[in-house]
Length: 435
Image 1 (tube, one colour):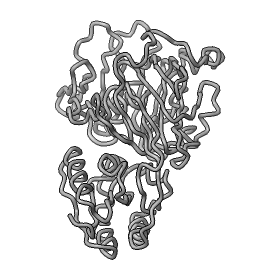
Image 2 (cartoon, helix red, strand yellow):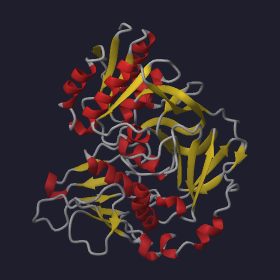
Image 3 (cartoon, one colour):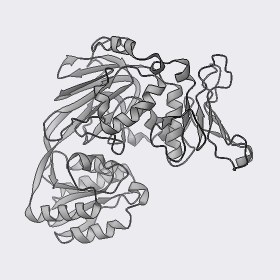
Image 4 (cartoon, rainbow, N blue to C red):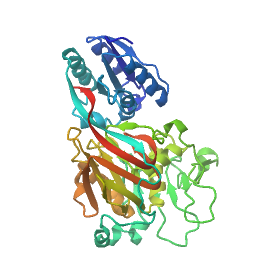
């Protein structure tokens, strides 16, 4: 790698491969500003090593072609350096690109980057720097629920949102129109039906999910017995594929120790290690869903995420969080917490609608416990960013955030960062963005 070369980290599978054919066009455009070298990488750690090696040689620029995960890997190498950084959004979400004001069209983004390189034009963008908290960094007891006093707001919430019989026995429609949490639907005449089955204390079958995947003539489709109602269940979630698959049984890995655990190299916030993220760190229900989906063997594709949502909805419970913002104690018990520099995550959900990657501050949002239906209904409000007006939601801004909750794995820019025991600092102008 030389000083007149542009290093390019590309993920051909980003955006489920939809933009694969655009890579050659983007490289051709970038070549107008200098020689282009595509970095070879076959995994996340490989990508980071390749980017670090490239940055250490002093290239003309480092450009990431892909989604937020690709950007996240590249940021580990370019953050805190003087190497210009470009992003060609070609992923499923592209929340970092949207948050910093880059074009959403890959071809247009490539043109903008090429012109910026030629003009030596960059703008400083804030990043969040993470390190692992030491065991005694926060002294609050594990069962504490002081800090933000949102309990009265929770008490005022409608009973249906806080666990009524209707809520506990909710039926969710996961048909073709579903996205994310889907929506409650009393008239289930399409798609897949999910009966959480929690309204009946005497149920001995666990929660049942009818995925409706069998042949059109089947009476019930495939049934997923989540095995959560019976304390003695030791098999985790079991999928009875019935006639659709010859009566086979597949283990979804919902029980402790089940499933395919994420590789050790994905615990990217090891003690003493500095990590960066550009968009949003999730540490609530959303993070639990991500972790479960990553541990599941079945099903493949978007259905896996849908099923992970249902598994976590069935196990929904408040979590105790230790939270400090610029030294002020705001510990709370709740379901949701996010920290970030950009407004959205998950492909446009505006979890932090007021976040600004140029203001030198981190935005934080937290929420007290929601019932299952209330959590499902939150999805449209997240898309618009209006959830922050809910009385059960609180927001903060700070330069430094300390966050801890036992048993939760945090996800930043959609990437696994390990246990949620993090010291997060906003670093103004940490990357020189080509724009």
